[in-house]
Image (cartoon, rainbow, N blue to C red; front, top):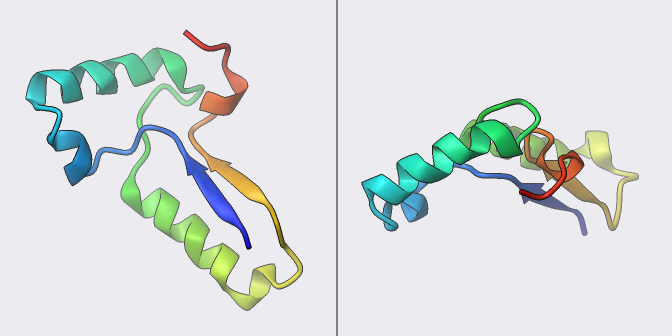
Length: 76
């Protein structure tokens, strides 16, 4: 079993926090994600598709950070 570890991804769930909080988190992602932005749903979906494909048939028990480098940044 493999899994993805996504960073901040704007989704409908994020919108439930309200527009002001959503914008605050998106702005904060510029300094907490090495790529300087939040991710996209499609970026996570493509990673899941690869892990679910036969191209990843020998990968097991892996956690794949799909987080724009957030895991590599010092916590802020």
